[in-house]
Image (cartoon, rainbow, N blue to C red; front, side, top):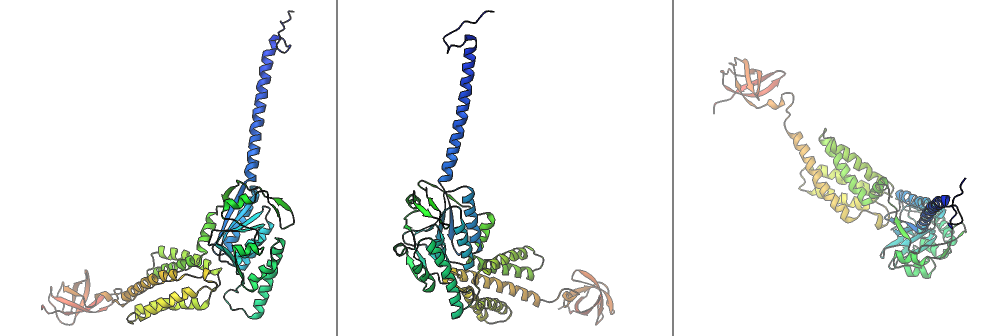
Length: 454
């Protein structure tokens, strides 16, 4: 057997060295490439998770839908392993039960929660102050304010005992949160008992917040490397420099419910719904006004149902609609119509018991009431006018109609009237072709009288 010639290629036989070297090189290259790709992917995923902040807006009135939106945003941040949740707060307050639920979710969040009162001119009033203090880190933009957290009983005047019970309960709850966050519990309690409010500088100087930040970007950059204490006592270091802020996108259902949760939107929907239902009842068979009106009325009621209702305001709304109907029926030279408009506008303004921020605006009340009054009176007048017309069923439409005798009436015969042939009986003899007037309808016969040629 002939031994292959040995070369200087790593001391291997020439017949095997080239293939083996190439194969090993290719295998090493593939392995290295896959490891590099995997490493880059893991590094990118780790970087993205560590530098992502899920932001959610808390604007408008705090209500049950706010609880749902914030809960989903916190869950999304936890599932995506985000670095933090950013609450952009600008609210006049809201319902105490909803505020408790949100505070519970904030405290139990696996991801640090940063509360930021923004933009300049915004506020975290009443219930918003509780959310600000419940967060792991509290910050405010220049020109904002917070506080004034005295609870108000829905739709009622509180007696001293009831007020004391509610204030003591809310104060104990707020103290437990503020103490855990290392803020000024004694001063925070005054926002409930004395309705005390603070500017952003006063809140910082009095240790109610942790930072004043001119912008969201500066807020996140200033938190880089800062150590915070979670509600359960764990220490955690924030890494938020150059973090990517992802806005939480509410679901279609959340957007719809949030849109109608405003009392102004609820009042508009309620008025349109009532108008649609009335049109359906006044003109049965149209179907669409009744269906659309029912949907809008239910949406409006669902919006107002979570707010404290003043029944004097509700009674004024009913009185206003009643006066519109009476105006179309009786001649009052506009007195009833004007009275109905005033009653409905006042009812809208008094409908919600609460601070001015959660009441129906004057502009909304007038822009809804005046067109509603005009349309309602017009429709009612059409209905009354139609009912005052003579009856055209069961022969009522033939009375006083002029016809022609097709046969001699002596006294009975045939008459052509109203496009129809009738058996007729005349009070006086009438020749064929003579003109007659219908004076009565007796079943399938009519009684007529002759009409002079003049």
